[in-house]
Image (tube, rainbow, N blue to C red; front, side, top):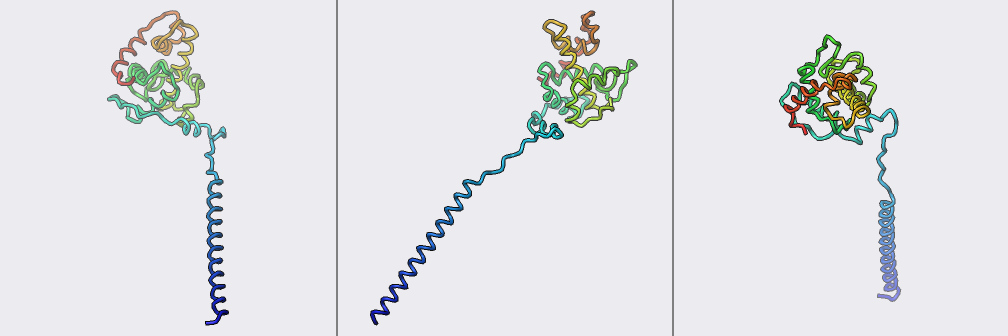
Length: 219
């Protein structure tokens, strides 16, 4: 074998080795570039709904409904009881519980939804007709959230929201006009209005509170 032949073989081996080294170096650079790219790419940030038209949807998203309420053996479906429970959680009246609402329904209408009294009181909560729209204006947000028909005074959800609005409004009046009012004062004003400030008659409130004991599982 000649010296030139050996030299050529060695050159080819060196060339092949250099080629492999260059290939490996390029591969390492590529992998490094990919890792750097992944580290610098940020995940998209969730968009918070700010549009006024989506206010209701945003509120439901940011404030999910409370846990399931206990279902009582009363003339209301499980879905209707859930509604009362969630509505009170939404308005956040710490002085008003589902047991008070059930007791009012019991006393006012015996849980009958399609009822109108001789004095023009409507629905399961027996809201007085002349004040119905006034109470609706007190807090319109629940009507929007639960998509109720404001004009159907016998509708269960509309009627209950309006009743809760009425109780909330009379609670504010009791705080303005009475010293250290309690739930019996609010119930009395719900029934008698401002006349209660003169009569201090708690017959209606005592009747409701007596019924509350039947629904005492709600704390």
